[in-house]
Image 1: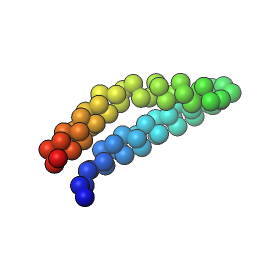
Image 2: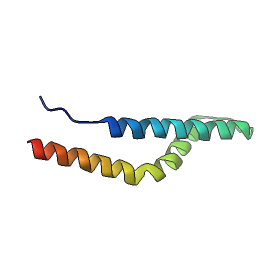
Image 3: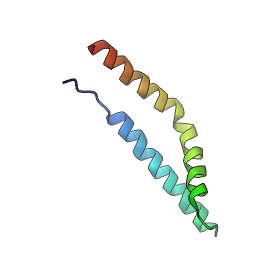
Length: 69
């Protein structure tokens, strides 16, 4: 069985969840009604800055998987 370090991906996921929460709280504080589309909008806004980190981590995981194979 091969061990793959997924900690960086988990860390990015938690960072995304935290950022989405901040975005939703900001919308609520502005008096907006929150619906599913707001969650999607906040997720896309927050995912954009993390995109390069996410791509790099996935490439690292694929590279480490190929080395062990």
